[in-house]
Image 1 (cartoon, rainbow, N blue to C red):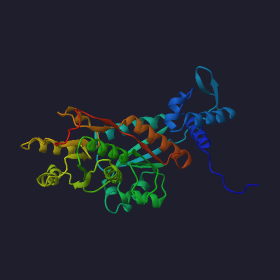
Image 2: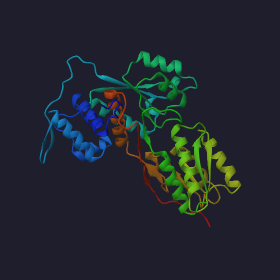
Image 3: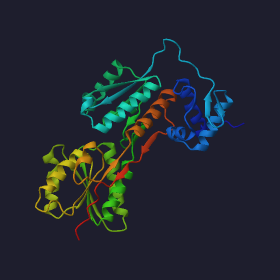
Image 4: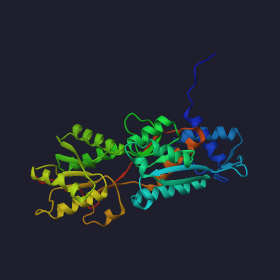
Amino acid sequence: MNLLPQRQSLVAQTAACLRAGIAAGRWRDWLPAERALARELSVGRNTLRRALAALEGANLLRPEPGRGHRLTGRPRRPRGATAATVGMLIPHAFGQLRPTTIEWIDRLREKLADQGTRLQVHAAPACYGKRPAAALARICDRQPAECWVPVLSTEPMQEWFATQSRPCVVAGSNFPGIDLPSVDLDHAATARHAAGVLIARGHHRIALLLKAVNSAGDLRTAEGFLAAARSASRPAEAVVIHTGESREEAIKPLASLRNRGGPTGLLVANPYRLLAIAGWLAAQPDRGAGVALLSRDDDPFLRFLKPRPPRYRFDPAAFARAMGTSIGQVLAYGAPARRHARLLAEFDAGDGVVAARV
């Protein structure tokens, strides 16, 4: 007799996710097509098919050739049952968030509503201070939620959620040593690609510009950027430069670096910081000739700049789907099947990457 604890297989986890979705009324009469369902659950087709076979055996669905999988059994939500609530924390008023962030939050709200779950967004600047414990406890006690989603979270916020063991999915990356469920872009992969693009265009001195206080995503960006420069086939010198939020603070280090013959290839986090730097370069006598700017982040206004800067775009709808999947699994089972979901950004070359002057 085997008395050792058994690990739950990915097939069993996938079947459990499907059961929870069916029980919550996520799908009406038919499941989505296999390809779409596998993408939504972040599993392979073979894994999904084995999970579907398990649900067929439980008389929850019936395959119909050429049509898909018809739902044949679904527990109904009891009358008067209270919808689950997801609480989202943001650092300032909703309208002050970047457009891409607003879009994925709106899409997430719709997705959760389809599952019978409410999303309540709380602008809570006090939760983003150096000692947020009291503010976090107060809002979590006064605004109860079955799961919390901190957006643009700080390290003290993440530490509090980790120590309090409150159900949570971080919209972003985790700080080192913190293991909360999270959904984010793969910033390290983006930075590695950007460094490679710059080096390939002849930029042997490259720099990454970040804000003075790093987010966890910024830390991943710096790691990927420096690692790519170290492993490049062509020698490349890479530095990370921290700047303030204002225009003057953003361009100050760049001005001193150019005077000393500094980096000619720049990856800039935050499109507004890139706009300040592009304006400053355009005002120089040589109009920034030979200096390449890449934006790690996207924003609708970037497409109106001339020349259009190369940038990394992501799909807010895909981000919302990944968030919705992780939140749904936390609500159903206490943890998502993929603890840390990472999405790849798409490189948009804009009007081209400026080659370094020889």
